[in-house]
Each structure stands twice: as C-alpha cells, then as structure tokens.
Length: 207
Image (cartoon, rainbow, N blue to C red):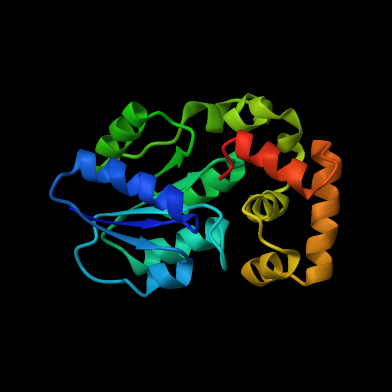
C-alpha cells in the first residue's frame, strides 16, 4: 500500500504516519506540507491520500477536487479538526472518499480507513445530520460554529503562530483582509487576543 499524508503541521503528519505504519506494516508512506508539494508527487500506484481540509495555498473543496483529479486511482480522504457539513458534502461530491475528524480515536480511524480501502466511503453521521453545535469543536467552544469556512482557515493558521502576512500568502488574501478576519474571529469566539484565540482552537482540536 502506498499513501501520502498531506498536512502543514509536521507533528500531526508524524502522528498519522505512525498510525498508518501500525495498520499497514509494509506500507510506503510519503508526506507533503502543502498542496503544491503533494501534486509534485503524482505517480501511478498511490492507494491513499490523507488531505488536510485547510491546506496552505488552496484549501477546502478546491484542494479536494484538484487532488482527486491528479490522483485518479487513489482514495482521497479529508481530515480536519473543524469542518462545516457543506464543505464535507461538496468535497465528497467532488470525488473525495471520506472525512476523518482529527479528534477521532485510533480504533475509529482504523475502521474508517479499512472501509474506504475496501471500496466504501466514510463520513461521520454527526457531520451530515447534526446541527453545528454538536460537532466536537463546537462542543469545546460553541462560538466556533459561528465562523465562516474562510474564518476557520484563518484561525487554524493563527493557532500555529503564523503572522498576518504569512496567512494572507497561504490563503491568497491581502494582509488588511486577514486583519479584518482576525478581528471578526476574536469577536465571534469571545477571545481577547490572538493567543487566547489560538488556545481555543487548540483545545477544540482544530490543529
């Protein structure tokens, strides 16, 4: 089995890689820190791609669609600590085979991957059926349900310590636009500053 773990957080990539190595002893596992780096690894025989829904550069449904098109023989599976049902549904319609919350247990992770690699798909029921406040991240801090998908992307990068200029470069936004997003994020989640917002995002499992 050949797989690629695509996520811009090295510690999370390492954790997922270790899980895969335990599940598939003879697996060949590569890593990518951005969508561009992932797309440079296009080759025949890739079975599985675990793709962070909020990758730098191009995120969300667009990233999922590009990955599905570039790796037609692979099962493309999205991961995130926080995702709107509409994002996940649209990504599945674009060809993704499933969505794995970053907060899911190792046993559930293994079962979901087995289902996907056997030709099925996996999306948690609460993503599709429940109201936003019932998701794990929203339970950790209800204010997170009020964020738009773009604000979620900004908050994820803010939580990793990225400055506004870097966030803007990753998401294709002007720095002043990033500042406006940060201001709205702080207001919506009731955070006094960037550090407090980062702490809320981390506790909610967004990174």
